[in-house]
Length: 118
Image 1 (spheres, rainbow, N blue to C red):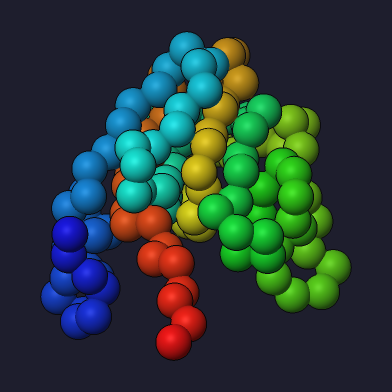
Image 2 (cartoon, rainbow, N blue to C red):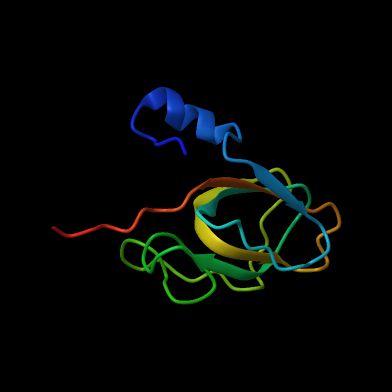
C-alpha cells in the first residue's frame, strides 16, 4: 500500500488511487479493510443517515464526535448537501438517505495505521 509520505503520492490519492464506490439506493456502505472514505461527491442533493468518523474528533459525523475546533456541530439528517459538492474527511461508514436520486461517489484512502509504542 502506498503511503502519503510525498506530495506526488498524496495528490494521486485525490484522483482515486485507492479506489472509489458508487451508491444510489440508500444502502449502507463500509469500505474494505484497511481503507476509509476520504471524500464524498454528491451527484444530486443528498442527506445522510450515517457518517461515522474514523476516530473521534477527526471530522464531522452524525454520531460520536462534532469534529475539531469549538462550536463545531454534528451533521443531522436534515442537513442537505447540494449537487456537485464534495466533502472531505475520514469515515468508516456512510449511508445517504434513500431519496438521493442520482447517488453519491465515495473516494477511498488508506486507514490510519495504529500507533505502536516501543
